[in-house]
Each structure stands twice: as C-alpha cells, then as structure tokens.
Image: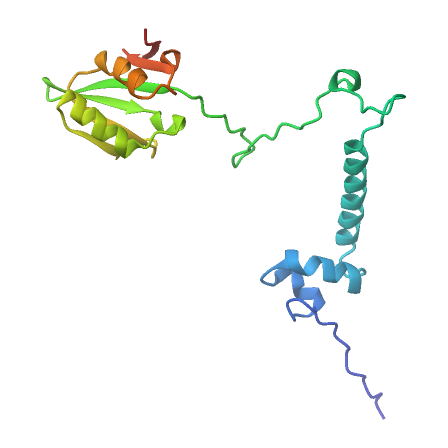
Amino acid sequence: MAEKLEPAKVLYCGVCSLPAEYCEFGPDFARCKPWLIDNAPDLYPDLLKEANEKGVDNVSDKLQSVGISGADGAAPSSSQTGGTSKKEEVKRLPGGKVKKKERLEVIIEKVVRNKRKSITIVKGLELFGIKLSDASKKLGKKFATGASVVKGPTEKEQIDVQGDIIYDIVEFITDTWPDVPERSIFFIEDGKKVQAG
C-alpha cells in the first residue's frame, strides 16, 4: 500500500496574507519586509543582509552625529573638526542628474509678433514672493496696456505685457517691489542674457 502524504504547511504573510514565498509579487513588498525578516528569514536571506547593513549604517550615522567635547566641556567647532556639521542635500532627477537650484532673478524679454506688435515677457517675479496676478494688474494699470499671466514653454507662469516697455519696466519693478534688487534683473537681447542697469 502507498504511503499517505502529509499536507504541506504553508506560511502565510501577516501583512498581505499571501504565502510568504509570493510576498515579493504582492501589492506592497516593502511593508512585508519587516514581517518576513522576523518570521521567515530563510526564505529571503537577502532581506536579512539588507537589514543588517542598514543597522550598521544607522549605528555609524549616529556615531558620526555625536560630537566629542573638548577638555573644557565645549563641543569642537567646525574648523577644529575639519568639515561642516550639516550635509548639503542635493536633489536628484531621474537618471541621476543633479537638480540645479533656481537663481533669484527676473528675466525680461521682448518678442515681436506680426512685424509691428511686440510683447514684453516678465519671468521670475514669483521667486521673490510676488503674486503674478497682482503684478500683472499693476503693470497693466501703470503702462495702460493689456497684461496677463500665462504659462510659458517651460510650464512656468510668466507675465505677458503688450507693447515695448522693456526699459521702462525695470524702474517700475524696483520701485514697486523693493525686495527685487536691480542687479537680479536681466534682459534677453539677441539670445544673450544682459544685466539691467
């Protein structure tokens, strides 16, 4: 007579309720990882290695953040330690490219359309904390032209003012909003960025 087979005992995940072998294919493997490390370390040995490495990294980070006080009880200054105490955080884009910080600058550009009509474009006022809708109203009233807030080609909002007011607008911006220094206002002339003033 043939041997009677025992039913297989299956360990189910306490988080996603799938069999532990299939957790990596489940909806949220990251949430299952701590449970798997505690209850099924033999199924995923790589997770155990990762957890140990993270633990070692956390301990080393904590040790680095602790300062050693000098003989007089004061913490050493950054010049004594030979480095800075804060790490600069660098934002990375997909592909590992480093995201550049936006410069605080206002760019003014004149665009000619239909040979005679021109539009003055003002970019970057929002970086100084200025509401673009309020700025467009003030520009429209000051120069008696149409002014509107539109999205530019880079998906950032800009102010379009009808007419060629490129040189008059610098004085108006610096007088109306003293937060905007004249040295941070630039013109685009012949494809080159030129500082105003």
